[in-house]
Image (cartoon, rainbow, N blue to C red; front, side, top):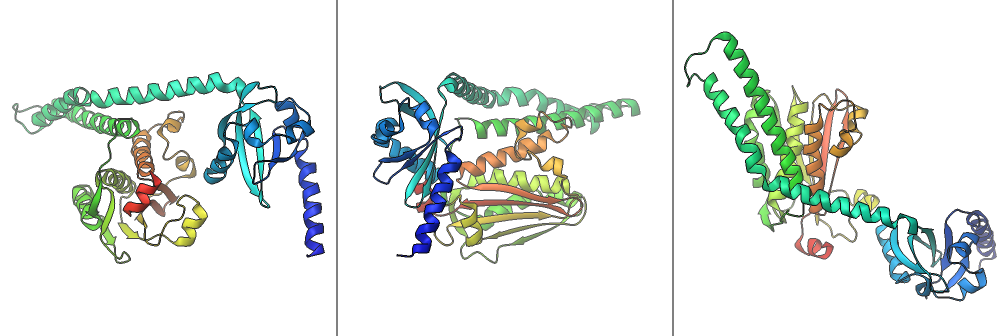
Length: 379
């Protein structure tokens, strides 16, 4: 036995208990077998009993499925909502956070009984949003058809199909055509976002050729790329095989929205698209993909030489609801588009993020799992 380590652990234990003794949250130390070995003063208030009484109980006696809740909180690194009981069987609701500590568990507990009505209202709001999104998706044809008609007929007038128009009329029709095109694009992006967010979204996992998929996306953007005189570089030399298991339709939407954003941000120069297996150390630090095998994840990086994004633009970049509160709303379509990419990346059990520097360009990154067994395990 190392006496120095024992003394250090003893001092550390005293310091820890002194710090947490008067915290506003209840703190309990729970042993691996579920016994409660230590509590602070706040725990006696929440559970309405003295320290000796509380320590005589097993954690599962005071918190519904308490050990399971501890394990879930540690695994997900998030607070867990649970039902709890006082020694006199009075029921209340808590928010529980747990951490592993020297073979034991440190559990912090906050009484949220007064918030249950608020939580219930939040659930109702979430359900309302899903129903609203579903309704918008179902009405998409009715919404887009009249706008499409305006676009088509105004373009016909500009093409001279309806007869010759004078200079002033031409000016007005061009304004109508441009604004109706912008409105149609906005509605398509809003409906796409609503569909991604709604309960109607359907998956179609299958094996497909990722190289072929990306080449098709690049071809679909040929006109926008050539209009700006941009060069495109596509690098897939680092991947061992082309066949991946994912939802091709969903991945196409994600990459289209990211590539589209890069094109809009870039007036001169190039756009590079690279696919590779992400660095194992980076994945480990991100703590998102647990126990993933080598080459079971794929990273897709889109790099442009555009104007870049300012720090204020990066804030809430993938959150269109946050952008609605900003004074400058001109980039709301971009945020809706990137918000869709963010939602769909999560649906694929992946992640998307951006890096940018003003006048140096922007980098969009996507990481998704590409192996069937990993995805099925994560479902």
